Length: 525
Image (cartoon, rainbow, N blue to C red; front, side):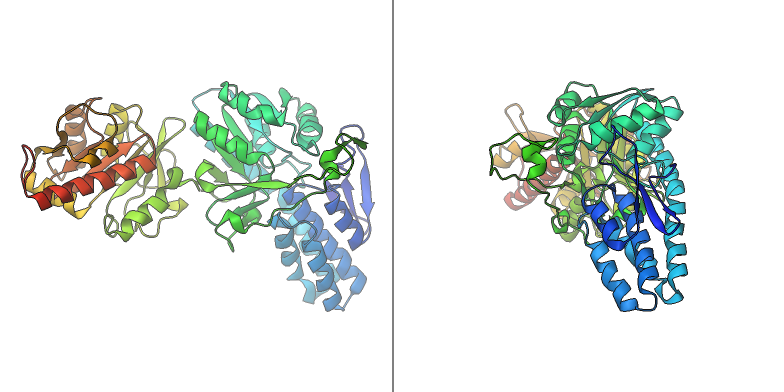
């Protein structure tokens, strides 16, 4: 059977994923209840495969009930509720119901069209995701860690994250795969390892609790996972154990990439806290292979999924687009915060964050900072500012950001804004240096020697690269993480975006104190 599930002689045929790897068997499901049971018992599993099964189950209901559309819709509600977290199931059910008025044959045709499209969708997103991963890494052949099972068994054909791994292998760009065993049902050890062996891809399985240690030990170049639901803002629900991998990847500075079809993106919710997390039976944890491993009566906390916050997700790749929900670890939220204060008025000002692969994400040119989304970020070479790929036109000040990333290797994020007091102090002082006295707030700029804080003021050239060149000539590794630009605004930086934002707040407060006190040590008032 080439597909993980299909329509054969009026029944749903599916690979029984509970039997693998010991036995490859196909089950025939002839009723709605049998399909629902197969979904609940994980005979059929994987968000895209569940969606396809749900579509075929509606076709079964339409055949059974004929013109009784109310009965078909009642069955459809039961089908959609079989597993609450995976959004693909409800999406597919609603999709085929649009053909209900045209009769059972039309419902089946719509369901079969979903199945037919699956492999092409998966191959398209896998190719896009492979491009993204390779752009994020400097290694020629990658060591990838994956979790759960996201291959052809989890879809109708080919796979999402595991499809990306197959694509990397075909390109000769894959060294090896580390597959998390994925408790409690061992989808990684049973299914992913089986698919990798079938494809001849070098791999090892990994105890879930050792995955983070493998990342910390430098054994992994990229984490690739699928998803069961992605919010409009980019929070990702996936098999339990995904969130710790994202934390470890962020700590190690390696990409955490999610590969999933557009049908997995739920535009109706923006916050991962709104995702219903399925709770599984305690017996899945308290026993193994039918034998108890915990004392009788022991209860268990057994969620099937966890939610990875958007700020830990490097990229979400679908068949149509690449989203960067982390937005440079919070760029849109930070921009909105400054916009509301009037520091990023209109399309002015910009923020950037250094990301793996020698790149940075920076706000695009001409975008309102009060309405930024993932599509408003441009990937650039961190040290040259040159755009990477076709992600858009970066902010005009990109050369300033690049100069700072070149000068300060530990710089992880930059904020360029136009706070009023800082702009006024820069304008009054003109090119040179503004020295701030020993205000307590200077501690916000990090460890420094005794004496006043000396902040450079650069000339406001119309030719922005000229500003960047003067910045690079003026700044040294010992310079404070802040500068002013005459009649223009302020720039601060730090190891992360929150630190850069805090330093912008500190700089604006220092300038406000300076103006109110009317004098600065060695500066102008």
